[in-house]
Length: 366
Image 1: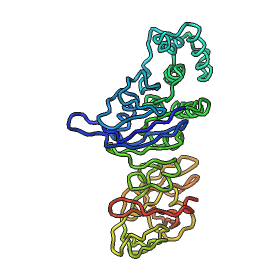
Image 2: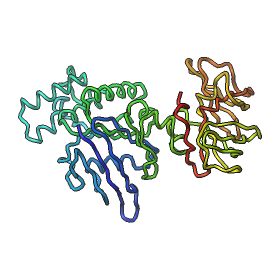
Image 3: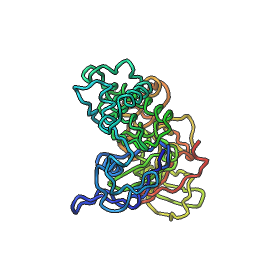
Image 4: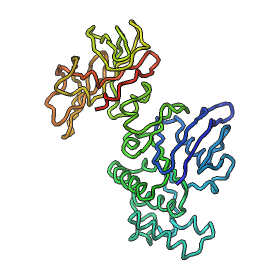
C-alpha cells in the first residue's frame, strides 16, 4: 500500500495552465475517484501521478518518495486505460505476463503471477485465447490482470469502463470494487460518471477546470456539498435549484422567500446572510416526492418516466423549467397534470449569491 500526495502541483502547456496548484493527500489503501465534467483535468492529473505528463511546478510523492522527476516505469504504479491496449497476436496469458517478461522475470515467476491474477479475475479458462475471441468485459479484465501481476504500489484507472455497455459496466464496477477489497491496494480511478464515483469510492475528488472543488466520502459530498457545482454534480438525477431571497438569517436557520412569494425555513447556518440577499435553494428530486413536508410548491408535469420501482416526473416548478421529482413505485401522474409537492425543510440546501453553501446541520443527513 502507498500514500499519494500532491503538493502545489501545476500543469502548463505553454501559456495555458490546466492544473492550478493542486494540494491533496490520498491515504494508503483507499479507493480514490477523480470525478468531474469533460475537460476538468482529471485525466491530466492522473497522468501526472503516473509520470506520463510532466509536472510543471510542485511535487508528487508516492509512498513518501518524491517521484516528480522519476520515470513512469520506476514509480511503482500500474495503469489501466480506457482502451484495452492488448497485443492481438498474444494469448491472454502472454498479454498479462508481457510486462514481467520485459522486466527480466523468469518463466516460472511469470506463470505463477499470471495464474494468481487469472484466478482473482476469473480468467483461468481463457488464458489460451486471443483478444479477438474475448468480450469487452473479458478484455478489460485482462488489462487489469496485466496491472495486477506487476504488484504495484498504486493502481491507476483512466475511465476503464467507458467502452462497455451498461450491463457490463455494472458488472465490472462490482469486480473492481471486489478486487480492491481483496488486494487492499491504493487505487485512483478517473470517471465522468458520478454514479461510478458514488458506488465505488472511499473518497471522491471533485474537479472543475483544473481546480479541486471538494474532497470527501461519497455521503459527505452528497449531504454536505461545499458549493453549487458539487451539489449539482453529485446525485442522480441532479439537484433542483430555485432562485430565492433571504428574508431572515441566523446561526440555526434561514427564512427564504420563494418565487410565488410564500416562505420556507431551511435549517442551515445563515449567520453571514442579510435580509434581501439573493440565494439559491437546493432540493434533491428524491426529497420532493413525499407525502408530507414543511412547505409546498405547485408543479405542472411535462413528462413522466415510469421505471417500475420508481417514477421520475419532469416539469415546471419554482421558476424552473426542468424540475425533477422522484417518487417510489408506479406513479399515475402524467403530462399536463398539476400536482403539489410537499418539501421537508430540513432536507433542503441553501447557497449564497457566490454559489457557496450555507452549512447544514449534521442531523439533516437522515
